[in-house]
Image 1 (tube, rainbow, N blue to C red):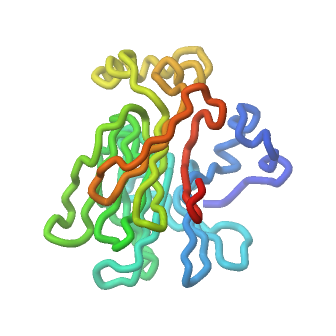
Image 2 (image 1 turned 90 degrees about the vertical axis):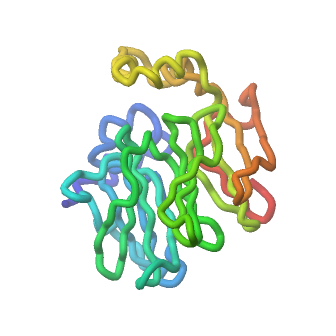
Length: 260
C-alpha cells in the first residue's frame, strides 16, 4: 500500500472535519484511534481508510502494519489500546474496526501477526484495557451497550454485558483511578428501536438523500451524556448538557488530574 496524500490536498485546518474534506478522505486518511508505546515512543494509529499504522519516535510518514485479516480488509478501523503483558510476548495491541460486521483484533508487534479475537460485533466504537490488564471494555454503538472481554483469570475469553445504555456509546477511556469514562450520544428513540430490529430498513434509511446530521438527530443523536463506570460496571457519575451549551456531540472523554 502506498500513500497518495499531499499537504495541499489534506491539511485544511478547521475545514478538515467538514463535508469539504470528506470528498478526499479516502486519499488523505482519517485517524480515529491513537496509542503511544511508552517504551519505544512509537505512535500506533487506527485509520478509517488505511487500517493499522505506526509512526516512529522521530516522526515522519506512517508505516502501514495491517490492512487485511484472514483475507478480509480492515474497514473503518476505529480505536486501539496497548497491552503490556499477554501470553509469551511482552505486549500486543487491541484494534477495533467499526462496521456492521465489526471485529476485535489483536496485533503482535514481535511477530507482526494479527489475530481475530471477536467478530460479529455491531459497530464496535471504543476499546480500553483495565488498569491490571485482566479485561477490556468495548462499546457497541449500534446496540447501545458496553461490553467486557476477559483476558485473564477463570473467565478468560468470555464476553459479558456491562450495561445497556440510553444512547450510542463512542470511545471508552480509563482514568488514573481505574474508572472508565464513556461518551454517549443521546438518546435512543422509537425510530432507532424500529431500525435496530429491521436491518434491511436501516440500510435504506441511511441512503436517504438527507444530510447525515439530520438522520442522526432523527435516530436520537441530539446531545452527549458522559458516564463514569467502575471496574464492576457500576455507574458512578453522569454528566449531561441537554441544551448543548457546553458540549454537543462528543467522541471521547479523557480525565487528566481530575479535569475532563
